[in-house]
Amino acid sequence: MKTTRLAAALLLAATLLVSPCLAADLPSSGKLNPEQATELYAAQKDGLVVLDVRTDAEFNAGHAPGALHIPVDELASRVQEVPEGKPVLIICRSGVRASNAYKILRKAGRDAENLWFLSGYTDYGTGTPRFHN
Image 1 (cartoon, rainbow, N blue to C red):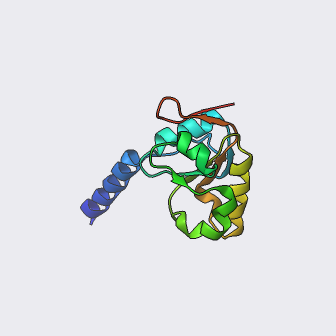
Image 2 (cartoon, helix red, strand yellow; image 1 turned 45 degrees about the horizontal axis):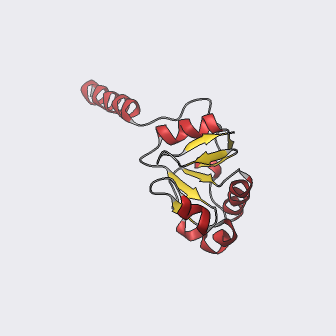
Image 3 (spheres, rainbow, N blue to C red; image 1 turned 120 degrees about the horizontal axis):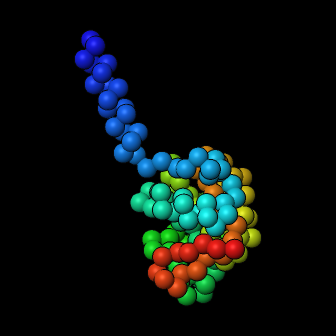
């Protein structure tokens, strides 16, 4: 019996150590500044959905690798395309459309627990998004 409890405790500890964790200074949801967005992107890169809500022309000029592109003016009718149960970072050019997209997703019933939007600019010149003021 003691061996089983010990094995379960060790398994739980190993799982928590191996799982990517969000830093304590990230808000549970909502607005992220560029530093927080960079931290979230780095920590959750493999499981993070980057939702780009810019126009087609902006997206085609450069975007985060693997980003889901849904222009903000189409999002209300395409909410079902945004995966549920995964962390989502919403980005645009300056943060205004990302904030509006966040509100659309919340109004559609999406859980705020793993939903953030960038308040700042994104540069795609390096092939990897750089978030800045």
